[in-house]
Length: 439
Image (spheres, helix red, strand yellow):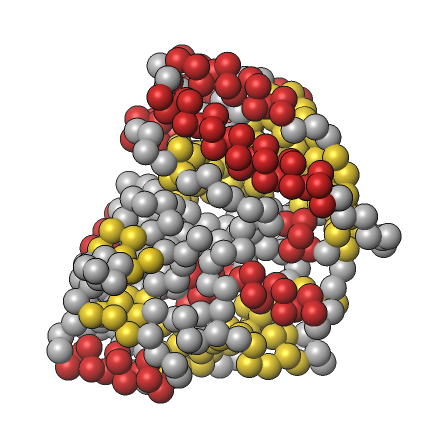
């Protein structure tokens, strides 16, 4: 489910349907040299430049009325270095294609998010993450980067080469340059055993520290208007491989989690008073299951029901208080929320504008079905998240600006100073970056 540019009117829109733009022109470069030339030409014309991937961000982070760069021809694996434990991949490669190619080579990323439709460059630029006790976001697994900067030159960086750029560009928001290649750390393909089961909300919060400490990857979904959650624990396994049987997988992951859930949301949108009853049914629809498979088949799932989303990272120790306040807010409000709240974790990392920069973090994601008014819910949730030093996910809806973000990111000034050096004329500008990074 990629974003599209209409051939009729040149309109680009994102997956969530909440961002629409009409660029002045488009380019789909077939090489780094072609991309560099396009950036230089845009500079001569005084035109801003933005690269887009599959449109899975809910913000206008990639929007432009200037030159829109499509990375569809900058795909594929450049190099696998088994001795170093790395793979270098073109930046327009979809995560799905990368995961499949790595599996064929007997390799895998250590951790990944819960969908794999995004391009690798879009995923890392916005801080896409899964859940992990010890392993962090996709960007935290980067070992080197290549990008085209505002003057059309090609810059490479790593911990040893241009380390100041490397520290920031792993989650660069599209503000420092256009990524052309990414080198990831990889490891021999392994198996994960997933254990999924329902658990009462109060029990999950009471035992959260223990559940987090005992599992390599722990996450849960809370269904608003209920006291129920669905928990998922993923841990490495010696095998044997025991995947979900195809028919059972189709029934649970496609028919129930996508097909029936889609219908339930249509009903809820048409008749909001029915949502609490629907939520109670939804929270009981999926039964407990355990299966063992290769990583991308455990970490990722199909997501076919369209929605809009807000997600904040709070200090991990603040999670339980934050969630209790969120539940109390929903319970005392007239809000009717048909989508579950997703909760994940990440260890502290050293990336300048990572949501986990310098602190162990917990992520709380709130969603609303596409076409359903979300502002009241998101505004109330955001008020709670920011009160707990929350940092908004860079690819998801939020209202924060540079004055706020500079207070929750101790290294914010490092990033903006680097931006001043690499893009003094703001070739990669747009209204969204002006708001979150300042003028």
